[in-house]
Image: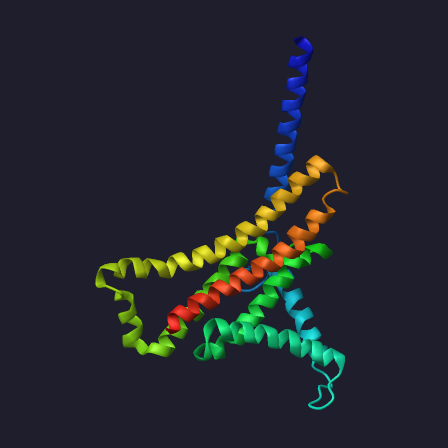
Length: 246
């Protein structure tokens, strides 16, 4: 009995230690460190997620310049064919989602999809993904909702835009207004929660199985799940935009 009691105590202490260690790592991930401060207006702190975003922007800009060099109308090379197939596939996907009237917004959706995909994958090479910062995901959500509402306003005009809040019946006007705030919140928390949830699951697997067994799970959570979250975010944005345009 005494031996069993000691064993239970040791097991409980181990579980508490694992929980505390996971909590510390989670707090580290949630902590938005200030990399440097711009000395104007009393000092503007620049968070790590902003710096990593700048790195992603620079890398994508340089890559774009390299990929679009020496493009040809006739006899395109393999590099150009792969590039056209990738961008053309994305363009056709969004065109089928939001229709002809939303074609002007497709470049934004493609840009956001590429950014979120790269941001979720950048942790593989040692950077902290910007999407682990709630401020970054909130900014993406606000940008998307502003564009969604603008697309509806641009299509329907001021009178039609405000009239839509009373559809299908005036009784639902408060609910339709609340939806303006619910949509960005859902986009923000879905992206942030899934990225953070993947981190928690991977840390738990490492605690239980060491560092070799989690490799296949890393391939799923860091690569597949990261790309899926990018797809879900832009898909919902496109879907909401289609509703605004109809």
